[in-house]
Amino acid sequence: MTTPTPPKRKLLTLGPGSFIIGDIGSTLDLSCQLTAFSIEWEVDAEDPEPTLCGGMIGGARAYTATAKGTVFQDIEADGVIDWSWKHKGSEVPFKFVPAETEKALVTGRVVVDPITLGGDVRTRNKSDFEWGCVGDPTFDADSTDGSTQALPGSTG
Image (cartoon, rainbow, N blue to C red; front, side, top):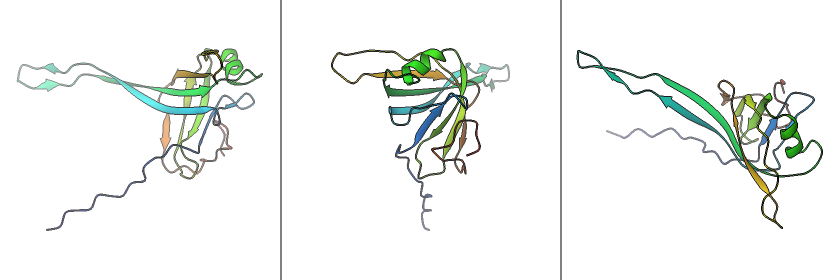
């Protein structure tokens, strides 16, 4: 009897790709300033409860996603600092292409929090950010809209 061969999977190497955020007409492309980016999930799970018959009823589960990254700061008009401060509290669309040679794409909406300005003296300052997703982001493993040029909310 032979052991079945597991399916071969393409493993992700992040980049080159893109991360574009904002509504058409006021987008910000952070692709060349990001040194790290991820969509992270968190679960809020209630404990299961025992029943008289000896069984268990599972607790409710709620999931939330967050867009997290590390970005080089800039101090240009409509750059990362200016844009995030102008759009603080705004709900905006985003488009994340993890690797432009693949078809995978993540789209969704986040609430923008202002990015920190400053840091260590005589260094290229970077800021970490966490923007909460509104609803669930959508992962499309076989997108035809994986172009790094397409804007969030557009069709390519």
